Length: 414
Image (cartoon, rainbow, N blue to C red; front, top):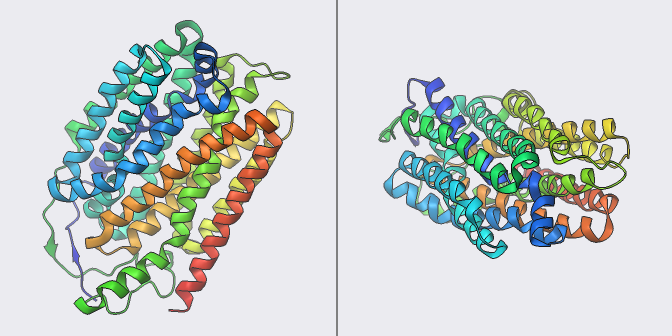
């Protein structure tokens, strides 16, 4: 089977570093308000569910924008869209502390979410073109690691700055950090390479591609609708993980600040933000996720990661602060491994001509889950408490596991 594949760039480290820097910038900005949600709620007289809209509006707008942005990237170039994305999101981040009302803040966050879509919806496809499918799991793992570092630095920076500077100064501090990373990415990211014909096996050349990874009839024009239907069926599992697991993860972290600040823990914002050190576990697990997928295959690796996520979330139900911290570390490691595996699965299964669209659909699922799940989790926590939130998120994770297993069964029957 022969498909068109862009020749990989020579300097893989340069590509990975630039994309990681763009991820740090984008995700630091996207989730910077999360640790200061209690301060936003107090300042604007909001309940936890309403305050969570600060995250939900941005991720929801990102989800809506990701497919149009992926289409635009196919026309003007993926590198160009990534650079526009990181620079525009930083500019909005610098203006965000000037918002005079919560309504204006939400509008600005929605625009920022659209800007971040240019990175989130395009980066995986850009990496697949740049490094080739053989090195894709490791490259995507490095990208997700950069994303988790950005999320951690943004949250920690905002949390520590909130005490002396308030939420305004906290968001400004994160925007300045993101500006430095965005400039590095814009100056370092290699230009797009023009596709050239060449033989390439669609897959990873390892157990990560699982039996039956080739799609019969790919070379026949008449097989187009059948090919798209089969490809969609083979990606239901990772798409479900993108929506359900992300919804569970964001819901837990959105409510974490409220729980840690409330009695009996009653932590200050800086101390409560230390929970985001758990993102270091996500950085390590996402970087190792490619090796796990190559060893176990997509399905087993993804189910294992989801099980770890669920186990960690259950640990956070305890009232002991050390056990709560351990639970967040475990669930973060599991979630980021699952996210990296699902993201790489989508990019590896899709042929080059459909890779951008497939990555866009995954990102759509991811951020719809983040926006809707995170907001729903805030409402459930505000009205019913942490135990009910754990029950809700555990059910979402169980549904994600079921979707992955059903996808494996569908693939085996082809």
